[in-house]
Image: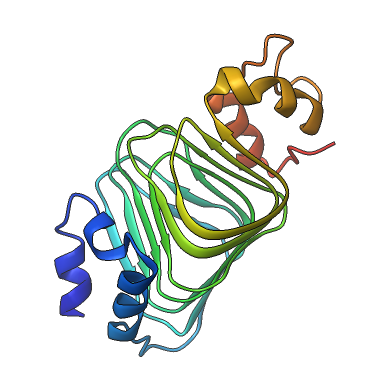
Length: 203
């Protein structure tokens, strides 16, 4: 699809998805023409790689891992029967034209979900280089560490927004013991490794 190729040339999708009206306009332009796909061994988008999955629905049996400068576009719905992980400090992109479901999310890069966004456990985004764009996000815990996400409505038992020094003490009580130390600090590398093994972040 020419529109997707054009979007992938952009350094950020913010100009196209920064408001609900813009997200609705983009969604109207996208159409999933391919049949449903099932990826049995997880999915990794390598550094600098672009992948476009044109399908009514895509099911990933395992984790979805994005490396720096890796970009994935799914024109329809995306179900990740594992975790979505981008543990890095450079740009990455996940654009879903339909709904998105996953067990947990840990992402530094840009995320755009044009349908419902549902996470079973923890939806964790960090640092203010990029943002998440969605109309609605549902999760048990939503964390935006030093980041301003553009999400219309958040439904969560706990929604923490702020610098790590501000949200750390609360996080230490919500997450599995040892993930956040007594000073309210944590390692994103450690979190990513646990999610890669599909270990829970919750008690």
